[in-house]
Length: 503
Image (tube, rainbow, N blue to C red; front, side, top):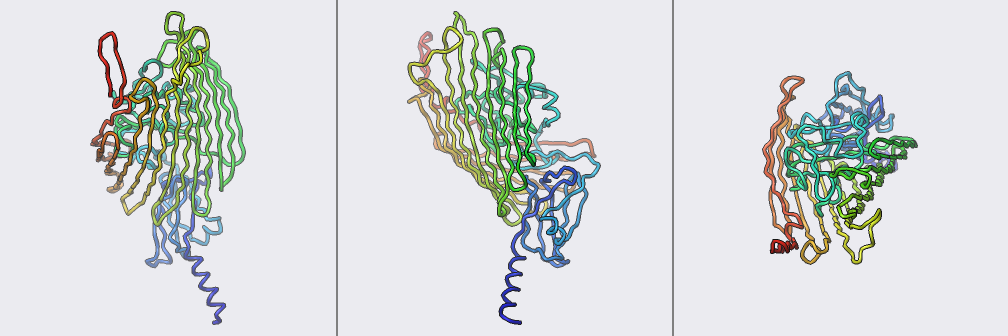
């Protein structure tokens, strides 16, 4: 054999040893199939491996793509399939699964931070899909969820709506949009009524503590709005809605792209003759502008995604003596992430930034006066995180770390008008499938804060099926209620009672 032929053979061998990215899709819809378990072996030899598809239905092999390599794919709600690598390559590195006639176990992401079957989650979780969202026609998250068991809706001063899960509410119920926190929580001015449902595909409500994953903000539970995946090809739609109480809404969406990159932009506007948490009337109104955008795709074995959201709110309501109160709230947030298969697991990096401004004024008439000084309250948050998830036999292990810097400005309400902190957290959790009907979960999160100290939040849970229609869930968790900025730095005077609170 000549030297040239030997070199060509070596190059061919190196090429086949390189890892390959494969996408698993639904035969009827073309949608990706997350959570599918994939095993492969090379011609019956000991060379092989396994993987679990990520949220985009993608997995990465270990480089054993000889023509005789056989892949076996299993996913709940689909027929099991065995296919040779040669056929996968001919199909553009794609495996297509045929749905079966059974009811598919619902996938949720909030309880673990990645797509898992609902039956494997130990904590109680409620979900509302697109069918329920369209049927409810609720203008905001508060009125959509108020009908669910164990969830109570209460007003907060001076305006706004607070949701309580099993009696715990306020800043101890974490509200997320695609896994990222909603604005206003650091200022204790978060209002779930301002969050629209435009572009939302599913709402997940965890009725129990998730401090082991999200920290003290999730002591009472988690509400997560999961937006819809952009569709292929260009599509645009718009709608207008009008109802009683001065309710007027308008929504518009544009989306498109292909396999390499997809995007969606959603805008909405709504107004009502009522202010959340208060009785409506001719002198009251609330108006919200909402804009959300997402772009995601794959390139050279990496999957990436970037999201941005903007919200602008104006509220007016009578406060007595011919005066009206005015709230002006502006929020802007964005995040980007990249993910890549690493061995039989999945590694991800994410960075998130958020800005929120709140201004209260009072005046006679329909418009507020310009403030003499800068009375705007602001919050700023920057967070970076890394995660790794891997399937090891019957175990699904998730590891992660996140670092954040937080700052608020609240003139005349806290000492020095400003406060900030830095925080580092690490977490680990494991879901262990014991047979076909039982899943045992355990995990812990350690948080280190340079203002209030450190804490650990462990959890242990079990989910066990009794037959096909009944399941028992139980969990034991320890959480810590971290003090807020305002609790640590109060600047409050009650002259009538003759006392002042500092710190």
